[in-house]
Length: 446
Image 1: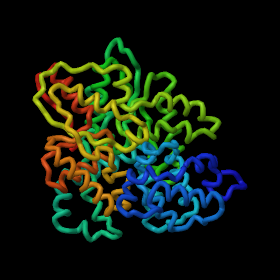
Image 2: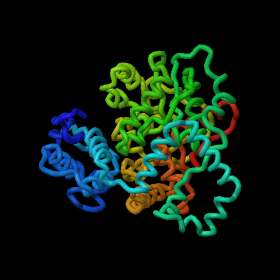
Image 3: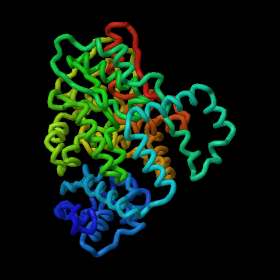
Image 4: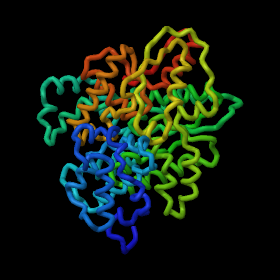
């Protein structure tokens, strides 16, 4: 921000604010407008507020701040918009301005931002240390006993309501699985040299999915590296107005990966992938990292996108029939515009029937930490999603994003449904394993 500018919205390229034609085609796609029918809770209404603040006609207020955080950031409006409005840029700048002015400051918020975003998610080693403690708590039986005792419900600030959303911690993290089983399995004459972003929650709770991703890549002629020193991608920070922390995370990853020597940087979580593709924009003003960030962003590929680009090998295994529904990650479809590739991955699995899912691209209510900050609407969206999933009769629902997986896992328990939550790549990995083992092993996200 320049010394003369009053806020981040005034410092923004004004043409971005002018893109919106107020046509209203975004309204039917917006979950918050659908829930409230309030103009201010629509993309069009939010952009009008942002523009009024940029024009100096409106002061950024607590009401404005609450509306910016009421938005799910699902970006369905971008897909619907005929004018190509860059809502993601507007959204992130608006939230950053909210944080700059401290419009929603309070003790709980300060704790979360300083210790969760600023400390815990800043280093992978810290997150893993806390994850090991959480796993011990889960495995010891204490979690079940405390849950039955009702102590969680007595926690202040509604924290007890969040406990059921906590994911199960993996017995091994990605680097352990990589060193033990996968590093030596890299093809001797690879067609491509790629590196995997292990992620933060993906690493500690869905390490098996990361292992499946590496396994699939190796079966498609890729040497897969797992760089040491990598960190959380920073999407949680950027989407919650902590822009400088997001830049720090981006610099750590750029240093760790050396993208110049890779054919691709593979990401298997839709939200992380979208943010990683924008490192160039995030670090555009950083003279030391701008050029390297541009190289990084050009190399980032969603796993489904990369497999489609290189032409995935179809497994030849005799797999049992299965019916699978596919929930589209908002940031994968609307942000990265990757829609056909996940379907192609699923359709490559022998005997897999991809059943239609109503409102497949309607937000499930996870939206980063939305299920924590706005639990009521988040659960309404989850119940709506699970009703559609159960109506398909499918035995599994596939999704390509960590937050969606956690939300859907809880939705399955909440609906008492007999449905597995899986990553499309895990289903493909199971088919490759069956070629050699005669089995149908599959790493579900449960």
